[in-house]
Length: 116
Image (cartoon, rainbow, N blue to C red; front, top):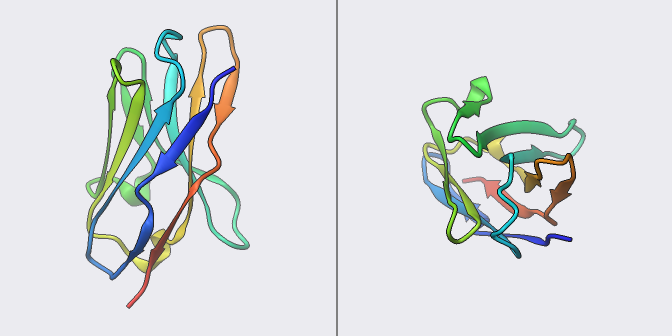
């Protein structure tokens, strides 16, 4: 079993930045990929960014150029640097990690609120 703990959320004004972190309780799994999703009230959960074990990265179209995903394998931690935040980025941000044998673990989420 793996626990994922997100941190770094908060309330910021439009145009500001936040850095989210997601720490896994185990670093020996060699996750196939780690991802950030977000869910806003009344909207479907959406994939924001993903990084594979080989370092391949993808982003949702509306965060390209503003968000950067990265990971520290030794710390089993994935980060999401979010710049130029918009009110539309307001959501609960959730971290996931997938093992090579197909298990997917989810964190509890961290709230990001962008408001003036």
